[in-house]
Image 1 (tube, rainbow, N blue to C red):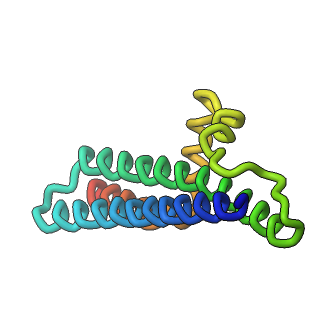
Image 2: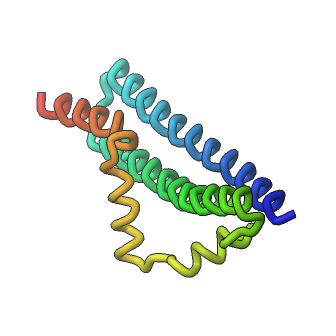
Length: 140
């Protein structure tokens, strides 16, 4: 019965992690669309630069949430493998929030976690290029 609970939790969290990925892609598409419209209308401005920076940070926040889920998924995969080999699990299912509270970061560390996600290539692209495009447009 233990492996059933672990597998159910894994399935639920894997779907949630995939959902975060979809929203991260939508944030990137929104930024790209906003830049394209601003360039077409010739309204590239500092405000657009700020909006793109906000979208970049929002993407990093989504990826931070996703990373927390991924940590639990890895724990579950180890527990499921242990159940399959020994019949007993070293981890209890349905502990995502309890585990998160045990390792929750404070203010500065949390901001650092968001920034760490923001500079990952999969998050930074295309945000850095969009912002660079606006900057080049403003200086030209």
